[in-house]
Length: 214
Length: 330
Image (cartoon, rainbow over the protein chains, first blue to last red):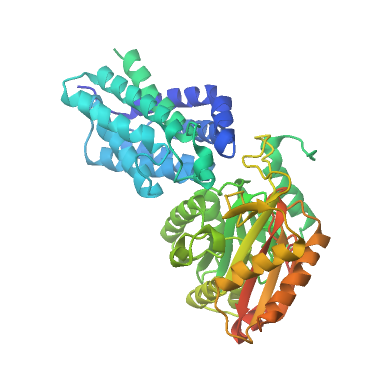
């Protein structure tokens, strides 16, 4: 069984950064509808900062937990607003999980659940609040279900991606009660939550990664 | 609206660069973080450091209150967006004179999270950190949920009082107590007559129709409590004074500080029109104006409108308010 190791995480962050960079403008436009129009910039710059930090790290850093902590710290140095602390806490929470024991790739759902728990703890939001959690929570549940039903690592990642995309789509029919869009209350109805859209994009890179590796 | 603009994505860096160049007698840029503005008088050995921070677009807040006997270091965020936890952390480090650091900031989700993470990092460096969260905006939540209210222009008075207490050699606990007392003594309300636009977005994300006004609007265009027909300045002033004073049961004879700030695009003369009536209303309630501040103290890009803050004073707050201060904004 292959584990979520250093090489896996480095590939994940590299690919996620590419996907976010490609969607930078679209995410900004989406955020401009109900927010301050910088979500694409925050996410693309934040993930680029993570990869820059990885390049500075010596190749001897082999522990995935240490790598995730470095990622969190780099993201915190680059991104403010709520997104900075939310993703940094997600990564710290993921690091705490990986510190306990190595995690097989088929148990990706547990890592996604740790990320979601970090975001939930820091932001005190929950499912249905029109936030990134509307992608992260369903993705973590779907991944764990797929693993429980005997799916392989690729099937698990695909299930997470499908659930994340569906979750992000449902945010159009929600009224924001957390985050910047909450300032608009009912004015946010009918718009996708940019944080949920970028979350689905990030989760989707796990599936791409799994396809590449099979 | 036509703007003085080079590149919308560089506007914060260019603002900070110009600010630091213009006021180099009072402020400097942190050598390690160009999103941290530090007082030329900080840090002072053995004195409590004062830190704040917030999104840009509110100038002269937040950077304008950096200086002598005011704020020691300010974390600068993107337009209307909380600074990074790292910038708050670097501000705490820059303000640290070994006697602890008081972070006095406004109640917004991003600032709460970033300050909390920064305080944790600073504690690891061995710096004692305590916070006061400003919540003076009356219309942002009902009185029995004051902890949910946002912080607005009352923050300036909180910095003034906290900074003065620190300058007098107060301990961290004493500085925190004074700043908390200051913000607890403040109530504010905002009224919007026209929206504002983030340059990178290009369109306002809320509208105020011609002939309408929005009472209770927030500093970033957060919805107010009433959208109604535009009234005369006196009627608006009466409404604002009533909202603020009804929320704050002050005994007759109480002395108050009054702060009227423009939100960016309202001419300063109109602020004096408002003030004239506000002061009369305050006096009609048996209160006394001890100090008045009228001008652009805490703006919201080019929003048309104004905010009113009334702070109840006692001898301690009067002494701290009167203390000499040197900073670009006050």
